[in-house]
Image (cartoon, rainbow, N blue to C red; front, side):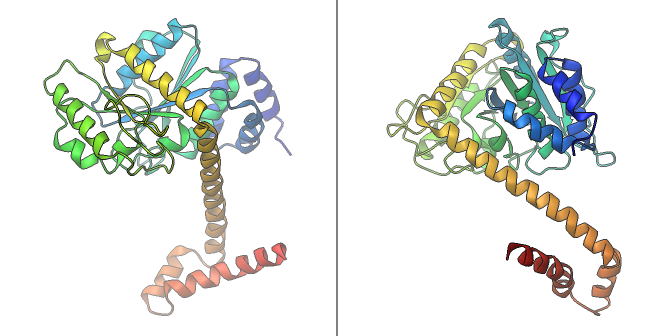
Length: 348
């Protein structure tokens, strides 16, 4: 049964209360009792927001760009939700930079909702809680949701499974970094943004990215079907000849607000491509499939932790292995076998 405090919270959120939205995201992030009922109920109200992922190396200017994007969307009359995913504290699990001052251009604007969240140790840069928070913003009715990720390196690919459009920021003069990262984080980009384009090396970085896109024609993608079969006509611009998406390359100087319209235009083009090609629905199905797998892993993992405790705890089991009384395979078999038998009986 749904806990007594959840339904009123849902009602207030759906009625436009920013306070309820903040409370809901807190409940989601902390995994407080009732959060699953909350997210499950919000599902039917989702699916209208355009979700944009912003990632890239530290120092590439992600926060400044997000600030300017939100400002420009608001000038168009659209509402914006921003989730800033910060590194996790190894001690508390909370966001290390959770109290930093960002979104300076939008302070006091209630239609720009900003929330800093912890990555919670997720190697992909996002946690399940972050994806659930996106659903809360979507159900609330935000037109645009921007997810700014930690920017810790090429493992940061979970954003593909959360965002409709992914922008990777590449600072000028990246040089060898472009070559090093092209098999990782760079492959998730729908749009490349060479930010700080007024600095030396910007032209070279654009050229290197263009060459990388050219070499990747018909090539590899982290998310199967993320770009589709690519064929490059005008490098970094538009659609491939067979209807696949060719990553766009745009330049900006976010601190001065330059190039922001070009970035928004690239986002709009990709959104149109997703809708016209039918890939929006394909990616949604892929997203839900991965979400189901993730939740299964989490729930089964918790069940197995309980079984470990019932068998004396991981320390005692490890000690038995160290003393050659048993081995890891035998330990796992002993713990899993009764669960497997129970599942098999229920299936039959």
